[in-house]
View: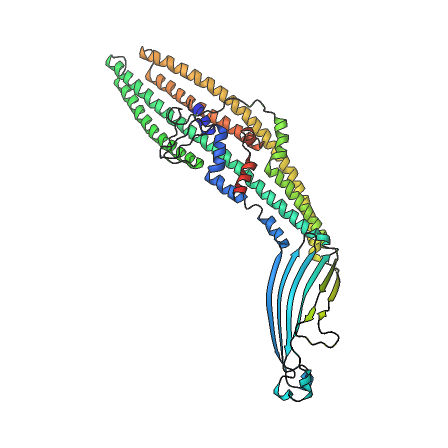
Length: 513
């Protein structure tokens, strides 16, 4: 059977000969097809690349804790008027500062900056021509050099105590990254199920083409038989014309179904990332055999499958993450209403030296400088922070309602899919009986027609019944397998059942990048 030989070939152990244009696949199974689509399918590959970007928000949130190094130079030249107020400053002052700093913000909310600097200060006091020979000449001095290491520590003690807000923002970003990853994983699962459906659409197109060819063959045989009977006077020649017309109609159907079959074949090859010249046929001799399942799974259990689905389905896990993020956002909004108490301390080693003439008791040496700063900030009637807290509470209530509704909807979807699966299996069994009876009836009527006991209309009706029964059988088998795939997807057990670990595949792609 067409439906029975094509499905297993595409899904099982794959042997791809891609060295030439005549590459073809043999003896594939369902796990092999799913694995190939997950690894080689164009749409699936794009989804996998998109998954690699799912942690962007988390990385951006973590960038605030990146260490930073800075270096620079600052030069200053000041000109003063020659007036009594600037007599002891000179008319020009020069300063040059070089610095190199390292800074980092920690997840505890602590800020650290270590800065090394070298500064030079000079002026033209006592160096001007008019200062020569005057008292001002005695005030002239070499440039003053200072250098040192500054260490600054800062900490928020109330609103963002020990990085509380930063941790909350990082948790929200982490939840968002995981939510996006789950969503893309679920979309990838739907892509794989779509691949199975595309595979079965090819099987249906193949069956339709076979049915049209069978109708053409039978119409030709009956026409030839009618010609013989007309020559013996057992049939009218207009009956020959009737069967000739039916034969031409069957040729048109063969051509149309051939085009449809080719369209489905090319779509399937694109999905599998195979060359367009790959030979795919229904038999296992020169192409790919097909096997569609006709039996219900032995482990089918509605209650158990439903409970497992509620734990595993990415869309339901995402609702849990969104609810957790909403609760975290509430904590963040409440922290914004707290006062801010910041403390900061700085130590500067300040080394005077090199060319400084400071006096007989302090020519050179280290003269450190320490500062401490404490700042309290209390928000008064902050309408924005109050609105954020209100919105966070409302978001939690909305997410709880959405979660409860989604769980109920998931239960209903699985129950309906279970009933559809059972109904599709009953329809398949009935179509098997219908096909068997149609073939028996057709064989009997053709035998009677040979002996002149039946009219051509009876043969035509019986032939149509057989062709429709065959098509109905193929459609029922495909509908059953589609219902089974939909049920497995809703229960999120399709890939586990076929030995495919999507998460492991995604991690392999992440490591490769």
